[in-house]
Length: 384
Ligand SMILES: *Cc1c(COP(=O)(O)O)cnc(C)c1O
Image (cartoon, rainbow, N blue to C red; front, top):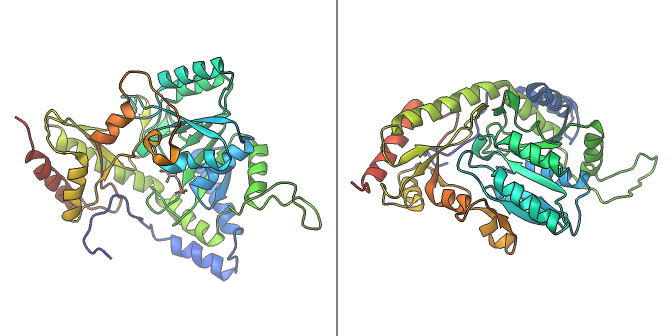
């Protein structure tokens, strides 16, 4: 399959995954429960220091259950970062609520606290405070959590962290995903660790986990016969896939170190290039560097990010444009987006940012190849 192609973020197995998968076969726990699922949750709690963890079959399911356990329903609004993947906000629509998007800021590329404050003030005026705020830690970069949390506390709105991309990233030495009332991780194939498909819901309260567990298992009541008082879902993680997750947690720190080294090498390679800057890292945060991204200055480089991505694809290197902001998506047509200034920062980042191959299995010589080809593309269009 695509021999020799350099991908953005391919799966990278550590070696022990197969062993844990075999355990599931040996014990015949080929089910959405079993020892691997319990073990995976324990390992994840230990790693993140989260109070409670529930293993699920996707990050999207985790966001959906977070909203359900908060009682978000038809007629409610939920605030969400606009510069993110659609999966951050789709569950808002699943529960019949309305998404309201919040712009990014220049410092973090994540949710702008000033825009959030403006949106809250407007919500107070309309007597329609949101039922939740979903903050995303884009590309593994931590959002400005102190500022965002204090706004949420002031208006008494629960915070959900979409940490799908930021497992292992820290803010003031604490894991992203563990600040809010709830947090979620994804183990999709392209994430920093993968179970091929999977997710995790973290919560501060045990009662939240219990509630979410019930909804994840068809909302079956505790009775001798089948009794359902609510509509449930089939969202638990398979015991086979949890085996992959246990093996992946064992190599998570080494994957993070490798991705951070990749970021450093890009940083060094582009340091002298006028018109190219690296993604920003907030003070007192450590990113997992899930993806390394660069920002182009079109006053210096006369070629669009789309054009560069296409040319790199033609030479076998996967380079991606930044997420297209959700307030621009036809699927969310009509949704509001609050911003701090005249200029919408997320729209600008969408135009100017490129995500570069960042997989922990990429060799130094492969990265050198990426850098050389990128420089060739960009320098050919350099404005002097
Ligand atoms: C991947 C991702 C998700 C969804 O996770 P799945 O496990 O693919 O459902 C949600 N939010 C963000 C920001 C993501 O990158």
